[in-house]
Image (cartoon, rainbow, N blue to C red; front, side):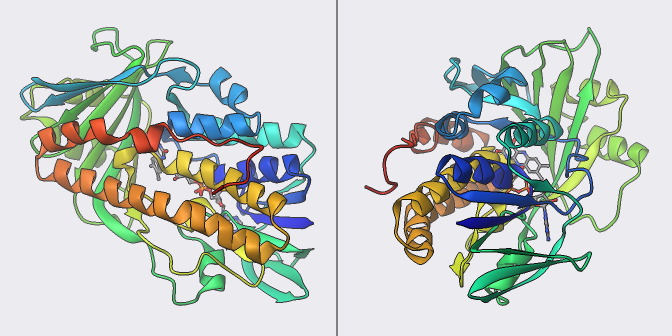
Amino acid sequence: MDVLIIGGGIAGAVAAMALRKAGLNPALYEAYPTGADDIGAFLTIMNNGLDALRAVDAHQAVVDNSFAADQVEFLDARGDRLGLQPLTGDINGPRTLTRATLYRVLHDEAARRGIPVFHGKRLVSATRDGKIVATFADRTTATGDVLVGADGIHSVTRSIIDPAAPAPRYAGLNIAYGYARDAALPVAANSYRMIFGGQAFFGYTTAPDGQTWWFARLPGPELTEPVPQPEIKRRLTDAFAADRSPATDIVAATTDDIHLSNAYDVPTTPAWHRDGMVLVGDAAHAASPAAGQGASMAIEDAVVLAQCLRDLPTHDTAFAAYEDVRRPRVERLVATSAEDGARAARGAAQDVTDRQDTRAWLYRHHIDWDTRPGT
Ligand SMILES: Cc1cc2nc3c(=O)[nH]c(=O)nc-3n(C[C@H](O)[C@H](O)[C@H](O)COP(=O)(O)OP(=O)(O)OC[C@H]3O[C@@H](n4cnc5c(N)ncnc54)[C@H](O)[C@@H]3O)c2cc1C
């Protein structure tokens, strides 16, 4: 079975490896000419995401290019500790890496396994007449038996499957990411420090080379144009000035560009598949960043979809089984993340901290490659 995968991001690259392992014939079509690795943010692959990577033998490459977090410490705006959440520190524990590194590692793995990757291929339409024909912005086409839409939160495939599909929802937050180097900054080695500030949320960790990796979630209107760097720094400094935390020092010590973007989510997508086309990852569902699970869920989706296509007689039955298994879990995650974000924004820090203890359903998820999903 020839599988056209649209989008060479996290879900797309993992789907390609999983489908290849399942004995199918995938090819990846990515819109950007050299890979969509120009985004400076970092992310954390959680225990469940790493478990899913292990199912397709791709976890080691991620582990080798990332660093561990063994715990999360929650603090309030006065600097008082609200809670400490241990995260397993073994190989299955969360791993932090830049988004660009993750894309590169997954693409290298896919290439090593002989999967064809085509860049500069932006899907604009797809039709089915026996086979699926995908048409790209450069007027070329590709033909396959099924099409997997792994084209992210602003998915074109989602609109092709259902032109009435709800658009992504602005989560009311701007997200900033930066990297600072200053020996005087506090060290959070192998851990995250998360601070519920009076006006905004701040998190940081210390990489093995001593650099501070940090992010901030600022409530505010949706950005419609790029914000100049001095203005970004001013907004951040204003937001954290009244807190007893290292946030303003960390922002001040950031010499490279700070990356600022909007947070969106997609709480539910009514149609996940139609006419031999199916959605995975953010194209099907996207969580606001509070739970830090978007990448892990995309990886889980990709593996389960490949298992279903391997184990079921037709792609229609496979897509239906995949949706049955995945939809309840991912929609629960999107709702949980939105609640966490809203509680943090209104200062209910202790609520969010207490809720962490009930997250075993998220982290302890396991995919057995040899077992049919849902059985
Ligand atoms: C700033 C930020 C920080 C985040 N932090 C975290 C975190 O800490 N932990 C976490 O788990 N998640 C995090 N997430 C969420 C996570 O990045 C996403 O959930 C994850 O990337 C989803 O993977 P995906 O493959 O579905 O989509 P993407 O990674 O977005 O990949 C989609 C790919 O499709 C390509 N594409 C788009 N349109 C087309 C088209 N028409 N034709 C061809 N190709 C196309 C894009 O170029 C891209 O390469 C964060 C997200 C953002 C924006």
